[in-house]
Image 1: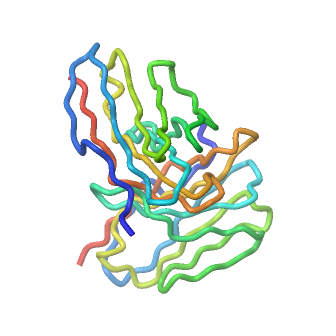
Image 2 (image 1 turned 90 degrees about the vertical axis):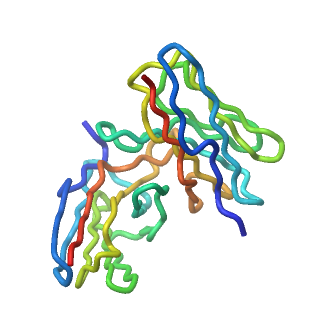
Length: 111
Length: 113
């Protein structure tokens, strides 16, 4: 069982549509990060959310951390082809203090 | 400033061989973490080095090892390669992982035949 489950696994939409990606867990986290990875590159950090209920906006991307700090969502408004990529949530876990990544959501935005 | 660099970018090895991958972190970053990314298992943490000491380790067999040098450059080694070791190996540097922002390199694509 994965610690961080993301849904959906795959998403193919047309330019201009809105979408939401979810990251869920049964564990409580002190913070949660979202990354985007494009083909042939490493993940790039988009945002870190720390406070339960926190909402952060990055242009057309809106990130929310659940009140109980067990889940998070990423909403993209008016998707563009440049949004195409693998979206990963990640959290610091356990006493080992390591970064654990979610299962990932692969997004494709077509013209 | 220059980003994280990884060499080589692509590598093909045969079963039973060993391989060494290299990572040069961003200047001033003392923490280097290694991850394995596969379609089936996703992105999994291998280990993290800070100031030449392994500080954290993931759940990988002892065939996977690493080290960090005094200039913060890091290498990881995989011995007795298996087909299942085929993956993208990513290195990330940070001022102080995991709480600090991690900057990833482009990865080394390892194929084991």
